[in-house]
Each structure stands twice: as C-alpha cells, then as structure tokens.
Image 1: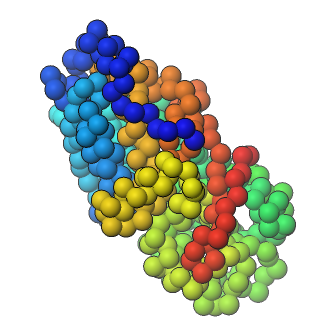
Image 2: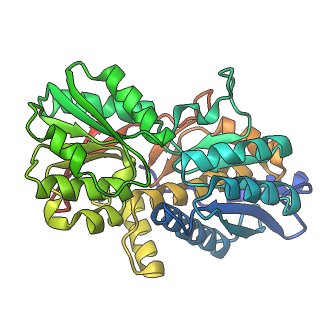
Length: 382
C-alpha cells in the first residue's frame, strides 16, 4: 500500500479558498463530524475499539493541520448497543448538532435503525463494520443515498469462507451453528449455504441471550462432519468454542469478522482456540508501514493492541477526511458526492473504491488461530 493521504496539501488548500465551507457541519473554523458507537452494552467491545480509533484519527488529523485548514470538532455519543438509542442519536447528530457526516455505528442493526433519520436529513453515515448485504439498499433494491460502509459484505464473507473450507481445508461436510436472532448471522448463513458445494450435515440455531450451548453441541458431537461454520459475534462464539473444545469436539471452526476481538479469546480461553479461522479486514502481523504505524500509535494512546474493527474505524475517518478535501467544502451534499467518487483510497485495511451500491471493492483475509495466536492468513477474493 502507498503512504496514506497527508491532509492539507497545497493544491487542495488553494481549492478551499475558492469554495464555500458554509452549511451543515461547518462553521468559520471547525468541521463537525459525528461519532456514534456501541461503547456500552452487549457489543461494546466492537464499539469501544472503533470509537477509540476514531478519536485517534481525529487527533492525528487535527495535529497535522485539520481538513481544509479547519479543525475537526468530533461530537460523540454512545448508542448503548441499543437500536432505538441508535436511531435517537442519529437524529440528534443530523438535526440538532448539524454534523457534516457521521462515522459509525459498528453493527448492522444499529445502522439500519439510523438510516431513516440520516436519509431525511441528507447527512451521510459511513459505518466501519456494518456488513449486512441490504444495509446500503432500500426495500426495492435501490441504493440508500446516504449510507456507505468500509467493511466488506456478509455475502462476500460467507462465499469466501465456503471457498476457503473447500480449497484450503479440503472439507466436504459442514455443521452450521448460527444466531437466528441476528441479521448479521442470518446473512452470513445464507451466503455460505449458497456457495458451499459440500454437504450441510446439520444446522443448529441459538439466540443472542443464550450462554449454555451444551445441548446443541451434544446433538452434533457424534455426527460425521469436517468443520463447524459459526456465524456470530464474539460474545456467543467465544462460549461455543470453549464448550465445544471442552466436550472434545476438535474439528476446525470457521467464523466471520465477528470473531475479531480479544474478548473472543477471553471467553473461549486461549488454550481452546485451536483450529479456528475467521474472515478479517487486516492482519496485525503485516509489515506494511501504514499498519505498523497505526498499531504503534493506537498502543501508545490506549495501551492495547488494536483489532480489525479499530483499523476499519481509523480508515473511515481518513476516508471521510479525503472526501472533504477532494470536495473542497464541508457541506453534506458535497461530502456525499465525494464519497461516491472516491478512487483507490489507500488505508490500513487495504486499497479500495466504492461500487455503485456504496460498498468497498476489496479482498478478505482468512486468519488462522492456534493456541489463540495468529499463525497464518490466506487472502481470498471470491
């Protein structure tokens, strides 16, 4: 990857003097950007990591002269892992706070809950990690004009994991254990089943409140299968991995990006995280300078290793900053147009442009964990 865009280059600064920066999100010396993440509640491990990364990126940009010679004024809220709260926060940011653009939230359900408010206000929202396929489309299949994402889609992950199981694990028989209460998990399951050419030996379901999975695991333990496909978030996946390994189920376990948090290891127990694979947006083991610089800065700021959700959120702020720089102003309309026109954004999680449905065009990594440690990764482009 090339070195990340340096904000405030001379040509764009000259452009800024010729363009108006008035309107929603901009005053005489600051550009308002909204941040809304699940900093408390059920999926706070995602939201906190992303909110922290947003703050880090904003700090860096402001220390390097801001955007269009203006400082970012970051307005932050906690959605509390509650979709009703997310809708309320989105309304407040778009109307009362009059931000130019919103970064967040982390999860699919919260993005969907926020969509009506930002669409009415004409304020674009860029989610770092909302992955449901329908997120950027309305019920008629038309693109949502103000919804963008920097993560790949569930269908992309599901297809990639099906191909990985077939081509890399030489597997032909799968068991699916999925979260039937989550749009995220349902989308991943649908995509996987549509792409996997082998046999689905059994399909079991749980809901977000479940913590005891022994009945499910007992039913599948003695079946003839080669891996478990486990679409879900870290909070249930960690417990399922722990209980499966303690029951003597040793087959590989494949999951999506919802596995990508330290909390998975804490819940499962490091010794239980063997033969676990998951789709990821970047690898912290990369020797690319952008990745190593980001990790060093994040660790210095927060004294913890950043996960891939932090990396996605960090990239999202720089993406938004690039869009504002390239548009020459901080009006909501110009930012939306500039986001659509982004070409080859170069970030920590890769280089990408948006397709016509506001989805990034990128590949994925499948990370392999042994004893809780990444020992390898495979790039997959379905």
